[in-house]
Amino acid sequence: MSFLYKADPVRGMEWARLFAAKAPDVPFHIWPDIGQADRVRYLAAWVPPPDVTGQFPNLEIFFSTGAGIDQFDLAALPPELPVVRMAEPGIVAGMVEYATMAVLAFHRDLPAYIRQQREGRWAAHRVYPASKRRVGVLGLGVLGCAVLGQLRTLGFQLSGWSRTRRQVDGVTCYAGQEELPAMLTNTDILVCLLPLTPETRGILNSTLFQHLPRGASLVHVGRGAHLDHPALLDALETGWLSGAVVDVTDPEPLPPDHPFWAHPKILLTPHIASMTQPETAVEQVLANIRRHEAGEPLIGLVDRSRGY
Ligand code: NAP
Ligand code: GLV
Image (cartoon, rainbow, N blue to C red):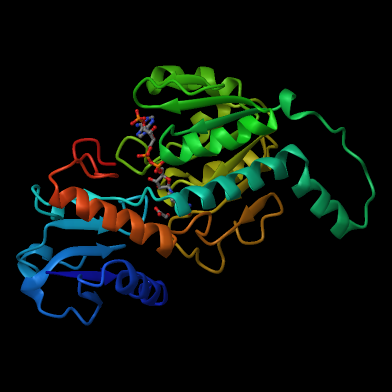
């Protein structure tokens, strides 16, 4: 039996050290050194290699090294192969930090002050308490709920949206397409933490922006293909939206002449809102292997019918 890792090789070396310390009985290989292909039972990758079960006939679990799984074609993996995504504490903590930073930046007018400093302009804007600011989160999953939990400690007015009905402490919850406009109408800062599925592709479009109040801002940390780029540019141009923090784009990276790079109202980061942390990821993977061996349910198992 062996474990094969096929993702960022630098972090792979950390995984290898952690496996050696925590599971010395599990031979660990880093792609392209696959060891003996028929001994590979577990594969962790951002994107699996083609014909994964042809190459690794005894594969028992595919672990996505990301929380999202849209970066590969789920349908190309055999239906009986369990696909497990990263829902480990390190990736959650990173997203809580980033989303909170971005929400606070808009709440405290940081983008405006950065522009003013460049212009040599000293001008104070009214400071409002967090209790007057309405933050809405699209996606009430592992990440959305963790972000809301942190924002709650800061006193924001919170709402959240999911596909099925959810209850989250201190959060006004909305469900399904019909209830989305009601949430948007009451949102000053919108955070997108949805998975990319056929239903959510292109969801951040002009129709959605029009439901937000004038002057609202966007924190986009879901997936690039959620966002209609021209619609965001239009909304910023007309002042309907006042700013956007964009961590994910389609394509990644953006071409050098893309208008987002130099846009004064867009803060762009290169898909770094959160990253899988080897220490906690290896713990979760090993816990899942133990669960699998004991016939227990896996943490982060992807529901193929939902696509996330
Ligand atoms: P998750 O636990 O699977 O939660 C997904 C949430 O989205 C659930 O609440 C789900 O509703 C909701 N949802 C899905 N489809 C929907 C739809 N059509 N309409 C309304 N709500 C819908 O996922 P997660 O772990 O929180 O991660 C969310 C996403 O964050 C990932 O898929 C990935 O795209 C992104 N991400 C980005 C970064 C980054 O660095 N930028 C890092 C990690 C993850 P239900 O509750 O009803 O199922
Ligand atoms: C990163 O974007 C992830 O899905 O983990």
